[in-house]
Length: 191
Ligand SMILES: C[S@@+](CC[C@H](N)C(=O)[O-])C[C@H]1O[C@@H](n2cnc3c(N)ncnc32)[C@H](O)[C@@H]1O
Image (cartoon, rainbow, N blue to C red; front, side, top):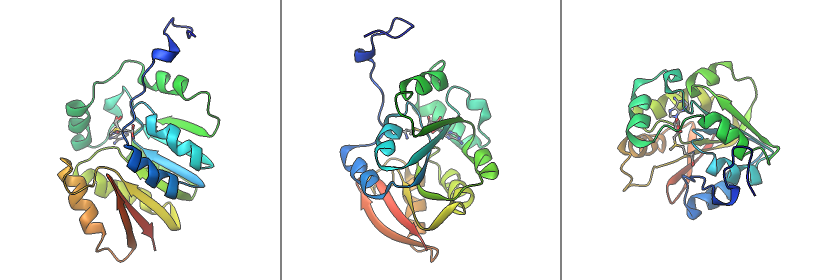
């Protein structure tokens, strides 16, 4: 089957940033109104949409100038190939699923305008210590009491030392209960 740009849909490979074990955590904790910070190609968004009622996924996509924090910008430039028309492609790739909303924007800016309560947040945007800290500060308040916060790339051996350090500190924070580490995902409950 070909799409309207002539690409063969069967050959289209979508990047999925989570392992099978990570996805077990998503299956267990992703529910209700869920938000993903950092979409990339939408591979994990698709997984989240199976368990949540609605998923909002947020990314700057190809427009990295939307990012307000320089550390995240350096991370994206260093780790990801910036794909042309990524926002459009992701919307198209996910268009067969009706409980996903794809938002192009900076996660910190979107947090300021956010109005609804959230049941689960999957945090996988910038991976620097200060970036993750600012995401938890700005998004944590939108999470329901007993809602779940899933932070990616927090396994002790992860090269993302900022994520690991932040996650270890959060384990000592009385506003959060550390639930478990599922492969690369640290799961916290908001108290
Ligand atoms: C590791 S990838 C996400 C992978 C995806 N969650 C998955 O599992 O397939 C990180 C993404 O976060 C986005 N990102 C990083 N910092 C951001 C920010 N401040 N605002 C919006 N998006 C950001 C990048 O553009 C990149 O696409």
